[in-house]
Length: 198
Image (cartoon, rainbow, N blue to C red; front, side, top):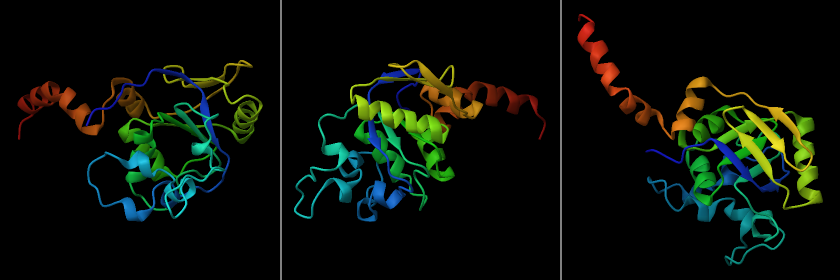
């Protein structure tokens, strides 16, 4: 399933300075019955966002109107725990296109890259600068450049580069998942098959 192409993202960010956020906190297990990538954003951080009577918890960041944007900034070791794809689906479906942290669980990172969410891993020091900038001004904008592999705090000009696999970078630039990539090179695959003896 194709998703939005990722090039340069310029937006405000939502801070979640909590370490070791696991996939069950991102999307509780009771919401994993659906098989389509739809509606999961409603239950992103469900138990942190809502009381048992479904009223919003006023002290949770996603319920605070002063924070908005397409970047979620998390603490160290974001996305640990189970391998559920639904955690990445819920982040995407809510509207985030990038998650920034100083460390990601490998499976969560891979699931994000497969569905169009860019996981940007920065140093602990730069992550703290991002949190500080948001705390000083929730309207602070950040620029995440996939071509340059760089995230910049626009208010100060401070930036840091991040790593990404070339294959995944190409897929995100084109809005491809793994199947889209194969379909895109279908002609090349066919020509290779014809030229290769069995």
